[in-house]
Image (cartoon, rainbow, N blue to C red; front, side, top):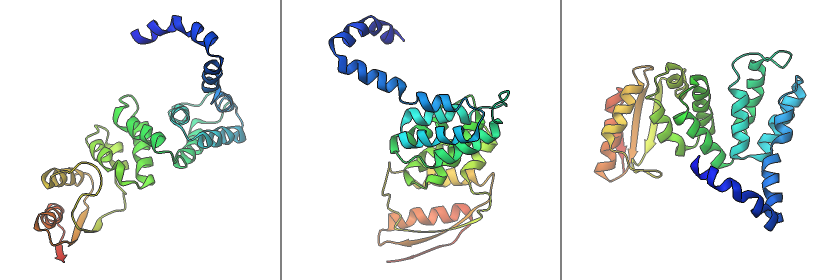
Length: 225
């Protein structure tokens, strides 16, 4: 806040000296003006058009605007019922593809302390994206105090997994097997999932990690070179 207060008096000078900058700032301000206005409508087609516009922008501000609508908790007079708004917006968030915009969804999952519903929806979105890069964030979210968030991370119909791997990490930071198995045991407090592991590796250390995962969940371990 202190930085913004310091810079504000300089803004008119900069805009006069650099007309191009003024146009750029105005464009940034108005980027989602149409979508924001459409979201105020009581017509379903306007809500869908606003959502489609946000998806076309495919940006962090667009995701944040969709969050505003997704977080509505009560009906708004003559407007569309909030639940219907959320269904339309949910479909739009599923279509977001920019990695930075998706990263904003992961940030909301981990940093939002006010709305358990919004954190739950964020967890479901990251699962639907199917990107292993969000695995560490989803594991961290297993410590969420809200049971609904924890359940959103796990497929309710899932009870058995067959994991075929070398055991060697390919993305992110290396995590020791004891932390992985602890997280799995924590997860199994809410839903029992048995993981059978199949290792194809000559490295005894990597094979050992997969064996520990199977043991921690009551699964079987086999390996081949």
